[in-house]
Amino acid sequence: MGVRLIKISVIYFLIGVGIGYYMSTAHAYNLTPVHAHVNLLGWTALTLAGIIYILFPAAGKTKLATWHFWLHNIGLPLMMVGLAFVVYGNESLLILTIIGANLTTLAIVLFVINVLKNVKQPESE
Image 1: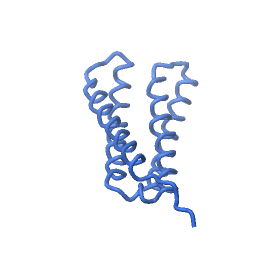
Image 2: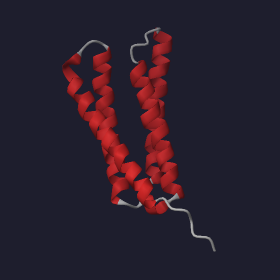
Image 3: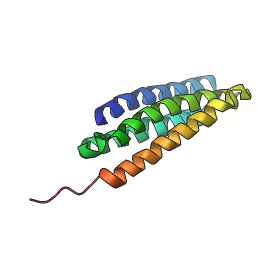
């Protein structure tokens, strides 16, 4: 699960950088919230979660890790598509932002539970 999270996180990094590049060349910064969320919740958070799952394989092998992965990677794109429409003044897809935010938040809650439950100090020899 750790490697899977790191691999998908670099896709979010590419998307976030692409949005930032577009904004800087077009001098249009409407998508700043999308850019920030993709980089923080996609690139940074998932990279760190992947590293944690690699360092603590017991946490990465749980159903909580699987649920975290899928809810996060369904919720974040939904939230970002909805948010992109909203920042351009079209609230017709606001429901995507709401659903996506709830799924992503649930994913993070599951990640926190997983870490608190399954990340343990290695036993000394």
